Image (cartoon, rainbow, N blue to C red; front, side, top):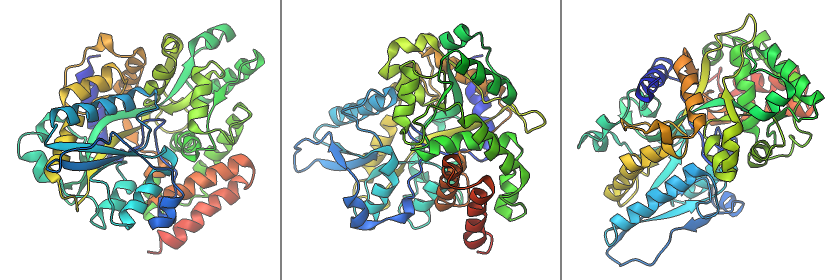
Length: 458
């Protein structure tokens, strides 16, 4: 299927569902940071912040900052390297006029650090953000600037594919600009599957059988991170959706977190967990992903942003890296629903250099950057750019095939619930169930109690 047709299909679904949510690139995804738990200098002191791309500039140069969740000087992630190229091109082309300094921190602490800077009146001029409750946290208090007029004044808006601004829009005003699109998928080692005589699973029962066979052949079936809670949450989100969990009813207070779909999903997570690597409880996302591309496990459940990390860290692995959509559950919800998300950019409402900020954002969405996104990074571009499909990582075709079959999308649970705090509560509850610190019922009761106190009675 042609790339533009797939884009039209995928993005129209995002419009229809209205539930796309954002995440990161180094590992990416939904971020479990308990962002609201700390603020100000105290939070800043706990976070390892690094400023990069800093050079002495003429006093007349307008200097801006951009905050990101990966170390651009020490990464092998191809999307991050593409972002580094954006900054380098911007600084070169605008030499003597504008200059962008990059503030980086690790993914897990990103929102804690960003909130600390906001609280201390040091909001970065431009910062990456996830659409959904995370973006809402910066729109409602007036931290993020309205970008609507900037997008429309010179036709910039018209370069984007339809639907990408739906979850960046509040009361008809656009507050963030997307840079790419990704889907949560199941990556697998084709050589291990072939050696074990395992076919790509189409159902949950097939997945269990495949894991059992892989394990009997001496392979670790699944690598996942519970140390980075959103990774386990991604799996649980798929299981909840396949079990017909109704988030709209939850949001309205017409359903309970103790309802059967959530209990069945949590029990299936526990059933799958016996096939996780032994160190899953403490492994970070980066470690779990490295287990996969280093040939230490057969399956990785992750967002398609992982293509950039996999191929950047181990280019030879691309040839044996397959991708399939999360399997169906018999008698469950539509199996062609997928988790989808964008990375997005917001501008500080207090920046003294809005023109420089907009110029930088346009570099992230120009033809050079968007072609790189697909042809090198393996993510789906958000603008009407012509892609040389033959240059793109082969995993991108698998992801596009998944989008082509998709009948609907939904966001990461930790970025689709009533608030960022609700998302963190869900993440933490899933980890506590996995670790055995809570039973399924007790873990779900924690989420239920949060909603009773903070959502349903508000």
